[in-house]
Image 1 (cartoon, rainbow, N blue to C red):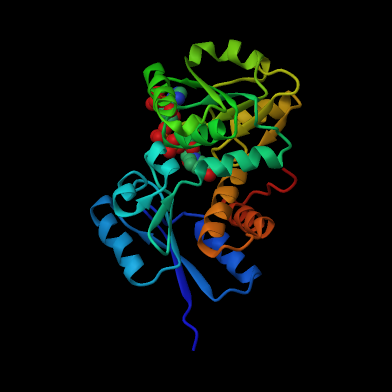
Image 2 (tube, rainbow, N blue to C red):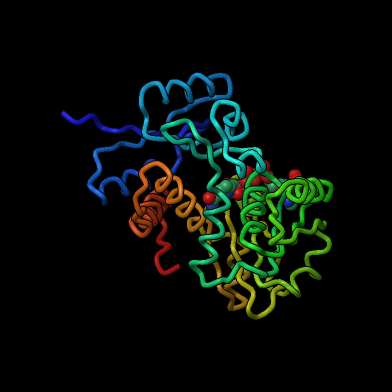
Length: 289
Ligand code: NAP
């Protein structure tokens, strides 16, 4: 009898993770005998859990908050995840990857943005911003990082230029939030990779208002709790094209899925499952966005 292949996401808290619903929908769509489960794992048990999953023959793992950095030590990270300093995907053989930035770049490409040579204002210098900056540079973008703590933008830019992550394709500059007005004037895309706008943290807030946006700007908020953030509302008020955080979530998940299974991920099914789960959780209808 065939043995069901188990996949999982490790992190804490994990109860509200959308990854199980997204990946189980993908397995069902492709008729795979597989199951994806969320495991509440704190930092103290990270090593045991990662090594244990490998010993048990798991098909693959996702790693999320607060384990992405620690997980580097318990897998064989590829060059990109080493440079980012964080892993979000581990395969059956113990190889580590970071697909967060790929998720963001694919979301932009799906929206019709040509990333190569595009000037992109990236708000934030935390874990997500770092992964996005690394992938944008690999794709040949001009990345203008602006962070509340300006010294962290500088550190991020230095980390990216210190190594070959840049491969001579893209370009990165460090700025403070005070400079955003000026930076936006020459930008094709604005990405919010801060926690501003996030439910329960900085809900109802935005770092950029519609008056600072110009026609043709694409506005991408990676925050997906809530799905319609104040930044996206401002952008829609200005009549601009927007991308919500679910797009990045789905594309990073699809990239993990492809690494584990070597199959084409059913991206639309995965996205529909995530949006449905968010709808039932919030009791709101976000269709049409
Ligand atoms: P993080 O490492 O904690 O970084 C937080 C960032 O937000 C820092 O740059 C911080 O600036 C900035 N920030 C916090 N409060 C601020 C404020 N009041 N004003 C201006 N900037 C502020 O967090 P993260 O892991 O990068 O995650 C960031 C967001 O992305 C979260 O909402 C997370 O849920 C979301 N996310 C989404 C996806 C997706 O797939 N859609 C994936 C990953 C993360 P300082 O450096 O000045 O503190």
